[in-house]
Length: 97
Image 1 (cartoon, one colour):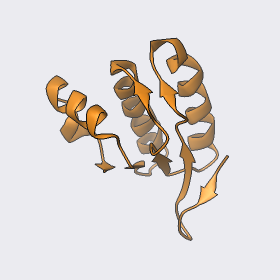
Image 2 (tube, rainbow, N blue to C red):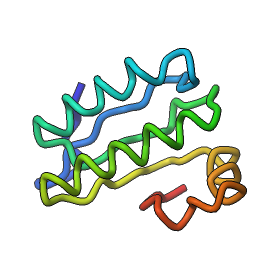
Image 3 (cartoon, one colour):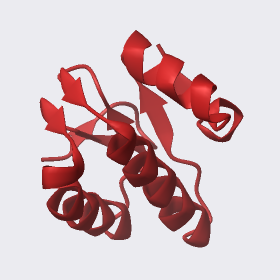
């Protein structure tokens, strides 16, 4: 479900879980939304995650860049931001907490 965030940004939500078990489906769903023009992802509902969530977010960002857009990540959970920092990929995420 895309929600207008501003006149030029549409966003979709991650859902509450993004783990290895759900990563493949989440990746595919997000790629479809990005292909349709989404330029943002809201992680507010994300409560259960593992390192797979980072891989999915980075893949979504690459897909958006291929379309010539940036993917704006909002409401990244503090725990996921810490995990990104531990893996050294925090600077690759264009996220706002």
